Image 1 (cartoon, one colour):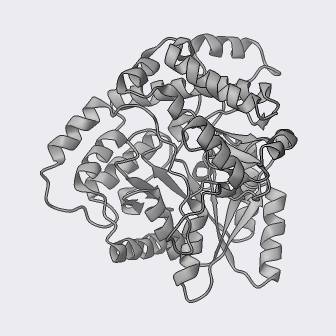
Image 2: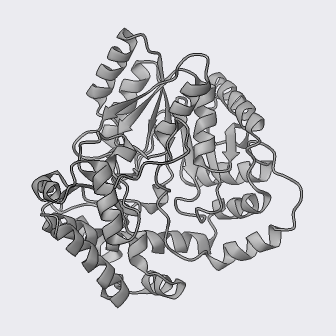
Length: 426
């Protein structure tokens, strides 16, 4: 049975963002509760305190930022929508890409005087999140020949859904190609602080054993290469806040165009009444200050998901399916095309049917690749690691603090169940 949405307009609902699957950090919960009595709303674009915290956060990461060029919104979808609306023109996206990107452009196309379109560009073999630079150039040429007006490229170096980190040289080539064609770039860096970090003993081994041994992924953002042409967007639900407390920030270029772009984006947010909830803004400003408890939780969560992702990746390969090795995030992007014959015998012939089958089999949402811009006929899904960490708060905390979470009975059983569900598809 196909999961067709009911009573929806032209913009279809996609899967929710990958949740951390972990309890709220006590320090954040206490701060949220203390700020709950606030009655004064946050202004559209964020208060000065929130914008200063975001700018200081980027400065500590090595990216020049000024509060005057920062804008905040109650979640990444609202913020990206405002940036797209302010930029005008058509949008270019990698294929696959986060499920919520394309709906923003489609929604603009349904309300704008001129149809706004989103064009997907294939990603290179080694990573997701960024388009292949040659495919990008060809797509821009084709769109212009057909009367389109490409203005904006949205990409993500640490990527959802593929859970990969694009190599710096690929990022540089893609951005060079985009800027040569007059495109502005929005870099979604939501998953920056979920990039896998090697343990100290692993770093020692990697330092003494060069290729072919795998190396810790290196993140270099487009804005570090081209600060005057790249806008950085970060959804704090990536590594800092619960998904139920939506807040996102963006750093625009310190140029005349960036200033104008931010002003137009603020107009959109103001018209929509999109202000960050006051208690969430207080917690977001605290988290962006990189306090010890928040940094420690982010690193522990990244290490936990990395360990579980590794086990799931091994199960995927053992079943005969394909997946890039995960190096960030909380999920894997899996290609089940090698199992097409076995799936067809079960009545599964496209991504929507595959989504229904695995969601029913595993008891948790397994979105198909069609949600992320891939063709419906491609048998691809995104597998999340959050449901594997336990069903209770106690089990999830045990997973977080365990020396090896894969040895915990509740994690071992769910990983084995996932592996069995994949193996039976062959």
